[in-house]
Length: 135
Image (cartoon, rainbow, N blue to C red; front, side):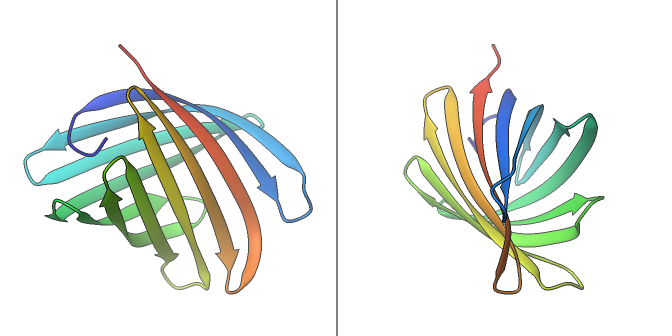
């Protein structure tokens, strides 16, 4: 997923700490240009478009560092750790106590993503996203 440029359709469910479910659709566009990888994503949640713009740098075949601009949360920084077809991601949000993680499992032209967002030790929400590669 981090080695090839591609466009993906996304279908997500966000679950808040009270169990309320929000559904979202969107897209992810991954552009691999030498040592830098750009991942521009958007999701439409209840009519509101939420965007993330990742700048990813490869540190080794198994580790990447990223910064992400999200207008809702702020600047996220973190790492991707790769184990074959699974990517483990951990991040923090600058100037806040927000933090979280994602686990991305790639199976050919489909990825399943599980993630969480915390405020300090308190769970804010979880999400599950299915990404399907567009041909």
